[in-house]
Length: 373
Image (tube, rainbow, N blue to C red; front, side, top):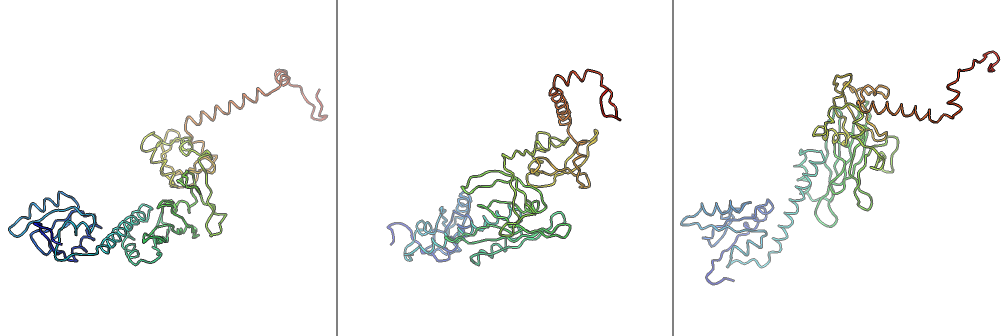
């Protein structure tokens, strides 16, 4: 197997094992001591960047060391590029298979960690997640506990292994919220390709508020809608039914907010942050002018009635009759113009006789006889 006038090496099994681990960490450059016949694990070094490998080679030249840097993407690359002679590995399939498995598991674990984090469950369960994946069971769960606005919030996250591979998927979680009155509400939320209702959005939904989400129909087509739990109805799985208010329902949260003198509607970043917060179902703090004085208040989206709910600084809801004092100037003027327009339309609808009669002195009527005189 030796090639004429070319160096050859024997490579230990530990080198190949180390290669698998290095590639799983994204280290695709290897420096090995070419002055040795037998290459052991202590004679190799791995790097993520080419320049780091070249700098190592440059700085480690001596009478006994002659390092060479090579780029590797598989165990086969090591066996091919680190030329070998007396010991020849006839079958490298097992190493390639192990490498692919290790790489896949590493990528799957990283993906699930990110998925759990960005769904709002933090990073505290990462170590347990790694352990569960390593166990290789068909499915497993992770338990999450926290407090949101001083209310206990819990979730059980469900992971399942694919039927066709060793990949795991985070496909649903059961959320539970204990409200101030001691009532405990539960709801299962499903994920689609790693996306769905986040932990904070689940909390808001269980509090009774609405959330604006991207959803998909049975054909896989994406659409947007406001969703809100109906606490009076449950489905066959004992979940609260979900009311949807699609885009064609006609609810524009920005337009609803703009009816009030909200200072954050500045056309810039504050406005963008406010709208995004409302879309997530949050009760958002705002500044509203009243009689020329700015007041801190709270606001939430109310898509069912195409408006918003207002709360004062003590989180007491402002009733409908009290909302007028917080209207924006433009809205108040529009309301006044609308009232005047209604009056004009009513006058125009009067018949010529009615108009003529309205110009004549009114006749007195006799209360006793009920007849005109």
